[in-house]
Length: 140
Image 1: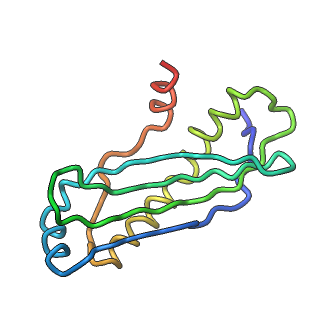
Image 2: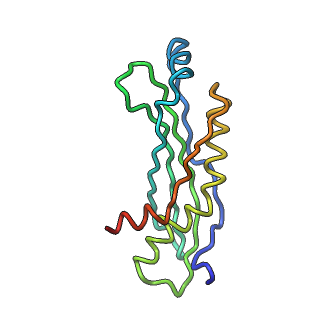
Image 3: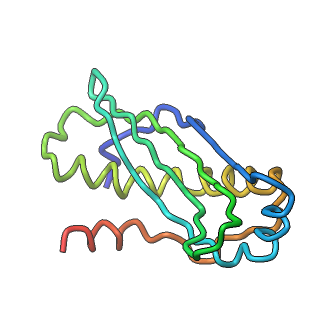
């Protein structure tokens, strides 16, 4: 099966690592295990069958602690959808699943590097995101 799309380019559109003070840094460094990875995918149609797909990763502490850092990256992909693809459901699957499977390794590596140079080295996201499963759950 051939792809019904082509990723023309991908880049970091926005990134943020905010730690307000030393006390927060020391606290977060010790309790970073409390943070959870979130993903949010949005898209914007451009022209000539191009779509901008924005994949945002956030690393969030859901506890009630006052000492929190903010970690977030938005990764943009410019995707060309093939001419024969007309069905919205197929385009939706391309954006939410197929493109994500292709870009995720670069996105994760970039995000981990950003966390590392922000003073939090050694972070690894052990659980890989199964975009196919997430897409199918969304349909149910």
